[in-house]
Image (cartoon, rainbow, N blue to C red; front, side, top):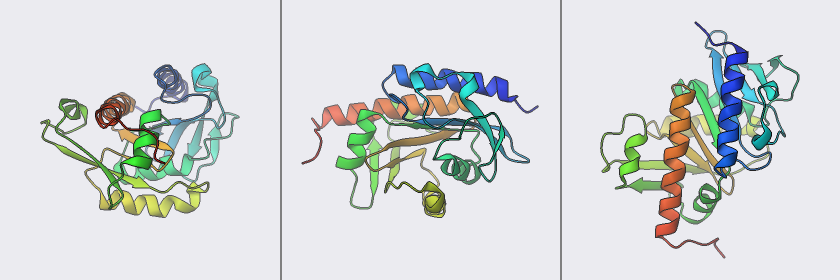
Length: 210
């Protein structure tokens, strides 16, 4: 049975407020989505420009596979096409995007030469889907920021194909995208990855690069 827009909207609003409270999506930053149905693809997603600390179910809209609003009156997130690309590429049930301090710093300051951030040797990695040991090596691609994510969608889809084991990716100077088979798993991935980012940043005594 497919979830209703009302049920998903309430859950997404709760996740948005949670991320605000943790400092991961302050002000109007961040966006969150969950799949209502796979055929035809319909996505519940946060409206653009809403304060995540005050996010309400009425500020969630439903869009089709082309990003057109099919339920609700708000304007979908400017990154809606990116959410749709991730859902298609990863068969995800939910996609979450945060703008935390540590994800922003690490995306700018610790990207490897090949455009990725690697995390390994930490117990909390086992909170990621399919990871069974702290010896896991998680490689998160780092991609360039843009103000036109519709045009950048093919680039993101190619990146996801090239990194099938990644549980998320960073946008340089911007923040984290992650996903899960459902909203609960995506929320867990946000919590795990944000924890790991803070550990890495604090261990390295990092400051904003000069």
